[in-house]
Image (tube, rainbow, N blue to C red; front, side, top):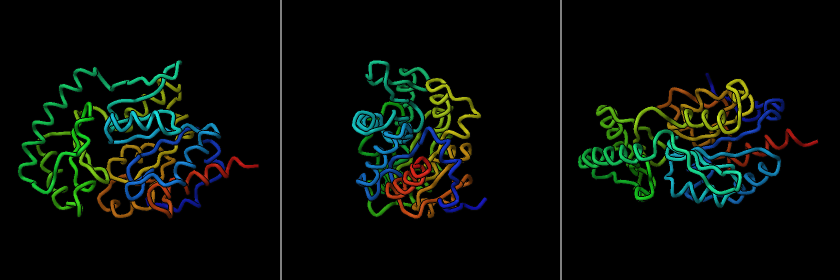
Length: 267
């Protein structure tokens, strides 16, 4: 199905949105920075009672900071491994997909396999935030590796999948984790168990924004799905596309979307 412009997003659809779930890198950020317009958009969405939950492949350490410092409801981190939210006293609470100790042990096994694979790909390296990851392994191909090692990324991803590892590419990393979950699985659990949304309500009240192949599980299941403009160069490699696309890239595109949603609530 072809992607349509953001102008096709109806006022009625926007008025039903209670949750905006969003990727972080290159969706809320642009060129490695959080634009002022994006921060303002996050604040305005929160002020209108719209709960924003970043859903990121970023590390738990980074996501802890996001949950504490930005006007967001919480963060689904490490590709769906954990939800960092708040309890009744507003203290941060970590909720893992499965037993925390088991997930951490699995990460160490995965790390050993990934390090063996990386010997054949000298242009790639473990992400610099690997020490702050609790459950997964991240391979940098376009964050601090410059210019981006795109061919090596594809070859490495193919090798990881051949080994039976659960690997997905974001706009900057290859993320490798234990099987059984992804961004959508944890998002559905959080929306259902914490916020009490039925699957039917999720279809109308949740809007997802992303920019890369590791967002496909979300694009496939949320009818209200938006890709920021920079998703364009990933689309040929993707099976599931967002329904709408912004005209601006990254966080500027997120701010563009936020203004459309907020305009539907103006008198």
